[in-house]
Length: 245
Image (cartoon, rainbow, N blue to C red; front, top):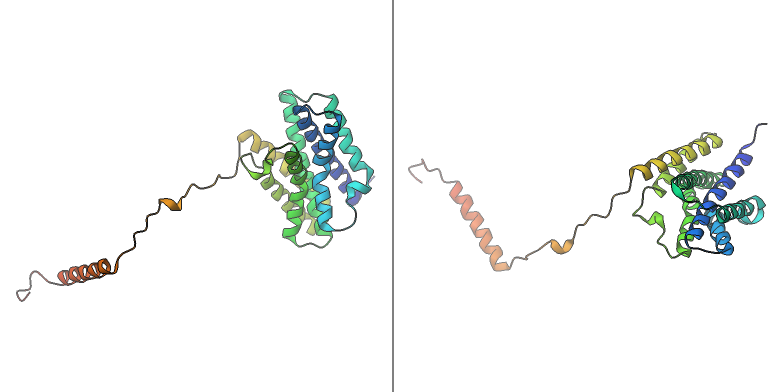
């Protein structure tokens, strides 16, 4: 059976919901929340970015409220995280992979959905990145953390931008499915490499204007400097071998 683009779009989007829902559940376990906390963080992590996207697009109710697969996926992720203690090196690697897969999924689906509604390239890419990082930002704020995408961490939103650009380019070439696949692969590979190798954006440059010392010249000193310059120029014009000098 050959699936159409809409079916693939839905599957990829729900996969991202489950993946990011697991990340929300992992945060809930680290904070020792109860089942309500697990469900809340899984829903916020899994559905927050897509709901922000749909509200900004103004194309009707957010898809998470009208398609039961989205909320069901987030709740399934919450239950898995509640029952299974995701600890150890293997679990951390699995969560990192889930995170990068979700990043690629939503960078692609958010960008393609915006472009399909007629938005220009830059707004489409922006909505793709918002879809990818919005849920994680809301989750971090709810637990009192500075959102990770604000800096001090390995590349994340920057990789989402690359995935969005790929998805947009292939969408306009008439290959939305290939765009989603390229975004997922790119974000997964580059994201895992960034975490392993510690790739980060440059930190702020420590240039301080207070170190600059500007000493204004008084009119009297300015006139004296001008006279000295004229005297040096006149002395340089004198030829020492000229007997009339």
